[in-house]
Each structure stands twice: as structure tokens, then as C-alpha cells.
Image (cartoon, rainbow, N blue to C red; front, side, top):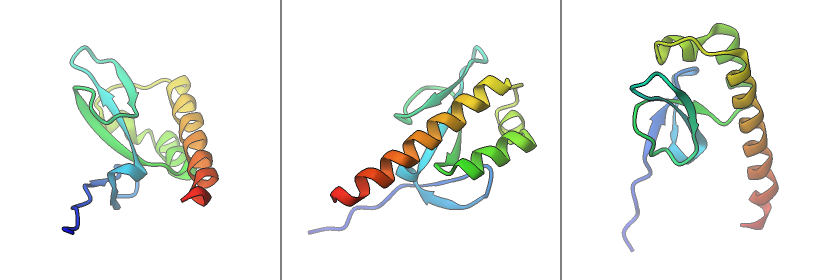
Amino acid sequence: MKKRKIPLRKSVVSGEMKPKKEMIRITRSKEGEVAIDPTGKLPGRGAYVSIEPAEVQQAWDKKILDRVLETTLSDEFYQELLDYVTHQKARRELFANDK
């Protein structure tokens, strides 16, 4: 059986290349709306961040996503992103034992 290629994406915070499934995409639409994109398929400019709460906290502290997406993000958005990433990491750890 042929081995499938794993798509890699680069984190805007650490600069590390990781599998797409281990990253979360944040998009900015043409209208300027910024959203978390769990499917990775929303239209617009995208930036990837690793599913690590420490990396999201670093992005918040240094306002990295503001620069990359060329917009101003609120603290509420960063808090929502941090909560989402924390939840996703907990789910992965919980269900990693099922495999």
C-alpha cells in the first residue's frame, strides 16, 4: 500500500513545520472578519498556530496574529482562541489512548 503524504503547515509563532492536523487555522476574510477555522477550508487569508496553549499565549502577548493578519484583534478573540486550543489539546490527550 502506498504511503500518503502528510500536509505540513508552518506556525506563525514558532516557525515550526508540523502536520496540518496538529495546527489550528485563523482566517481573515475580505471584509476584515477574523475567525477560528477548525475545518481549514474557510476563504480568506490564513495563519496557522500549533495546538499548544503556551504558543497561543505567546501570540497573544506579542500580538503576532495582529501583524500576520494585518488587523487588530481584541483580547476576547485571543481568550476564545486560548480556550479553544486548551479544549482541543485536552480532547486529543483524552482520546489518544483509544487508538
